Length: 360
Image (cartoon, rainbow, N blue to C red; front, side, top):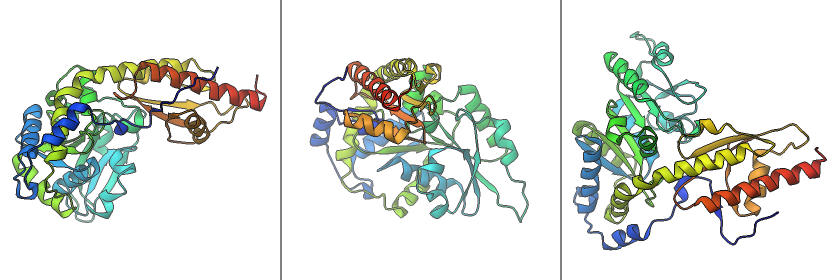
């Protein structure tokens, strides 16, 4: 039976959240100054608070995570060097090849089955110190790993990579866009999760729900280099306190409720696994990202794009990430009722395709 509703269940990403009333009030009341002169008091408070939370010397506010990652890469790796990253890393697939086009670096990728690199995978890619070979400039990890279904690095694995990299005199940058989700899943603080990395980026505008912004944290010296690169990339903002104010609220309030997103993702995964024609292992879902496949046999032949389009007609939004692969992401603007409605309609779409194709 079709489920009727006027509301849209948007599961495309946790970037689609709307600012909370508390965020909007904070934005309206924000004290501002010129951040290019480092005189915006709200931005400065946000940066100080982030540095405190992560146990680092300094932090820097960016308009986007892609710019923050790129600034980190430029701050660590000279042009002509290689950056080791996982084969489906965000910096490799979804940041417009800026690592090469702007930073002048070459990605050296490590394919993994679950997004979690280990030192024995990384070590063979470190270049010997030979004048005719591009040198390794940086190692980059992603936690949680977006395109591997929100997987989380075990703390001991991350520590070993950082320790071994530092012994080889290589810095390690963490794309921690969803590091607060990782911290909730690991039942650790973000400072513990990020402790051994030389720099960390995280997003305020994903699961934390702020409308705009990402942060870069590290030593005071590193952040000064990153500030220069931020300006070079056009990221110098003026009265940015109206944005930073929402980030301050997000930092204090949103981590407390991220566990609900994880619970909803688990509920969604279990429901999808019960739909014939969908390939889903609920045990792989540990945070708020759900990846699943569509069975291309049994007379259905429904592609991910067709499946997502059919759901969109029913006011459920999700993303095709391959011919037969779909991604759904939970967040605080989708409650359990919305998840249940998405499941009913997903079953309806699959069943309707089966009837139309004559499958039994």
